[in-house]
Length: 385
Image (cartoon, rainbow, N blue to C red; front, top):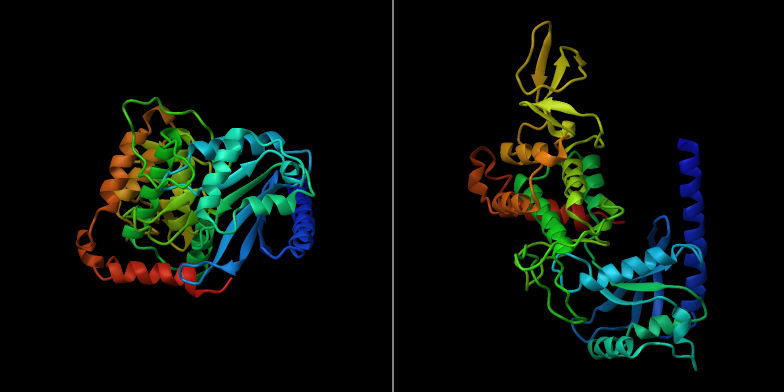
């Protein structure tokens, strides 16, 4: 099965390279947009980075957008339709990457052909008002092809996977305050997925909240992973760091959001093996003390203390906030009916993210604002791609 999976991944990557090459040839003939690089691919789509050839009027920077296209012309069309519909619901969510425009068939933008609905034309007029070189021009360039396309905002900070990998490679222990902030943002994103803002193109970002006048939506995210959690600089309108997911999610995805935090702490991938900790059966083994034989590692976790016979309990992360560890254990309970609710998760992560450096008296320097900024600078920006 492993060989078959690897072969499939290789085939998808090869198809993505072909699409990248074909798109590059098309954009080479336009003076408006240029294809900068391939960002990646999934099971049904490929994403590339586009750059406006003319610099922005503000700050003199070139505007960049992300283009998503199907791996195969007639496959994944339903997935694209679902994603476009979901991203429209998520407009204005502060912790979600924003869709600039989406179309079910770029052939509609061919010269002399217009099957665009009146509603779609109104949306495009709003988009044009915001851009001197509207994204509609991208679809016109692509109209030599068939099939769906999505344009997304480009978030420059990279993704959470980059943070996870670089922290692991350099043996960097992330400050608790940074871990809490990431966790809080991911939970906020889950709130927005259950209670979307239903904004319009160009609306300002709105902080996600649990509303009593609205039933939560039951949308399922297919792939919450580090590569799909993007990081941006602090938004001046939203006084906290933005973490964005590229697709929709429901409350059940708090499990997968929690896995991403565990991967920021643990040097090992998250296992599906349940362990006992203070009477709780949980999948959060990666952040728990483990029984170690003197001179060799043991195989179990037990929160009750070390045993005899040359076995001792060793905490691989002694500086981890006990409150954060407890929440991770709760959020990864084997008994899903006893996991914290979305409201509880929001309250607990918000309280954790609000902790000052003084909450960690023995690590005041490591938890200070200057240290948090330095770690982010090093992991997000200092190391070249």
